[in-house]
Amino acid sequence: NKHIFNNKSTIMKENEFNLINLAIKSRLNKDVKELKKLYQATIDGDGALNFHSKCDNIPNTLVLIKSAGNRRFGGFTTQTWDSSSGYKDDKNAFLFSLDKQKIYPYKNDSKAIYCHKDYGPIFGAGNTIQLFNCPIQRKQLYTYESYSSCSYNFNGDNNALSESGNSSWIYAIEYEVFQVIFS
Image (cartoon, rainbow, N blue to C red):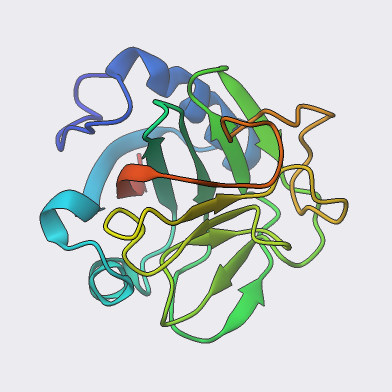
């Protein structure tokens, strides 16, 4: 996996990538060649405008998030981020917990991701994961895995992402976005 990590993640360790790689391979039947870092909030600027300037219109992105409670999680989508103010469907999308080494599949409800100019990445209906504008500065990251109409299947794991096990505001201390490049 060393060749995959040409741009180091501060959140995901190299040996944890197998979980993500297997999930991508099972959905797309493609091998990951490289993870190309597009954006890191603490380096590129912690704001929606910064995120969109680096990540819009690029397919196959992996979002990694670290909370102040040291929870590490994120999502993958083949769709592109933009400022359209709308949901996008993606049958290949999934969420994951690096801490639990679990994948949470998409339910195919036409709401895999939500794009908006005033926000960072948002996964799912009910904003299952929502990175607000300046989530690190303002301490605003929202997870809502217990929402009844959630777009991702947590199989009753209500403590999948958040520290409290319910919908919660948690503090983000870092997030990164990588483009997944295939062989």
